[in-house]
Length: 178
Image (tube, rainbow, N blue to C red; front, side):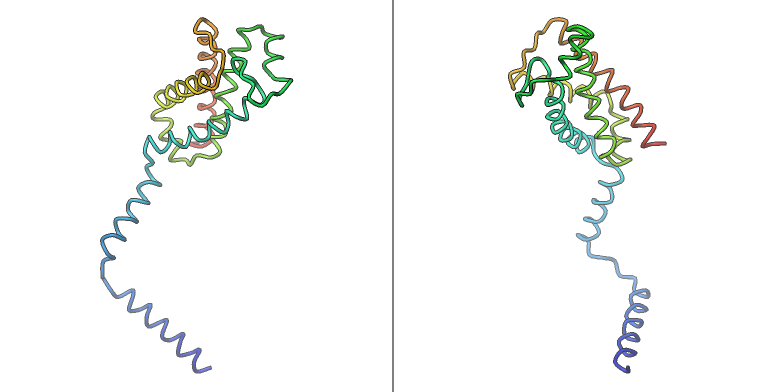
């Protein structure tokens, strides 16, 4: 029992000495801690974009499995939402709906995965983030073999993407920043 009392007393003394000391932590520890807290409180635009891009890359694969974009069918699925959209709304309706779905799904996932601070950065830089994501997506779709016609079809797909992005982000902002 005496050993336990002694160790408890020693811990108490050590704690009181700790409270009484006014030593500054080493500079590198202080700097590392400050940088980590700064990154959590105020994430950079680049960090947020890279997170959204990573989410979009995975989301795009899921999206292409469900709804082919520009005749791109990487998973060789026989049925697609694009078949339904084309039959119901025609080729232009399918292009608009495909773009809307392609980006809305990404931003819904992002809404769940980004922190409040990251959503604030997205809100502040929404148009530049969406534009970059859209351009990179079109380049990757083209590189993957998508049959993109640079006529009205791509413009309708882009319109669907932008409208879907804006509507989805409005919802996310209300949900996360309320």
